[in-house]
Image (cartoon, rainbow, N blue to C red; front, side):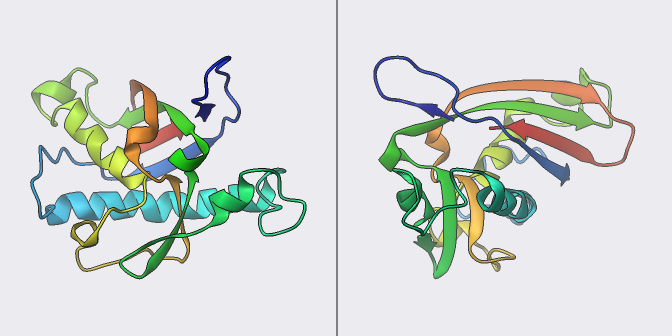
Length: 183
């Protein structure tokens, strides 16, 4: 996460999130979102929420949320975002002028160069990842389901807060795609 205020921009925190599952190329989906894209997005959210919940419970700045010892901004971060009756807690929010840089490592089970020629283009595989890292924005992003746990912890309130992305692909011989995102 990187503060967006003027002056020195520095890296405040770095941590790793992992997702082990399908990340299909979904194309430029129109509204309503396709069932495949919604399934991929919710799979990511359900996978990273427990990881972020653990970060909130163990990080020296975040674990004080809701106490008098909470540092500036942590109280605001812990306020839930309510969407369609569900609660979401996003770590990176515009109200505190936080932004996020991502280093994504895609471990794929096909030839590296085939991502464009045979398995779907890279940008259409990354879009569901960005959507899965953020809180949903409206009823069209729920389909027939909601989060597996409440509150659901998300990395971002809005994926527009991503200011830099680096994507690396590597060969993995298992049958599923693995994603390692460093926030």
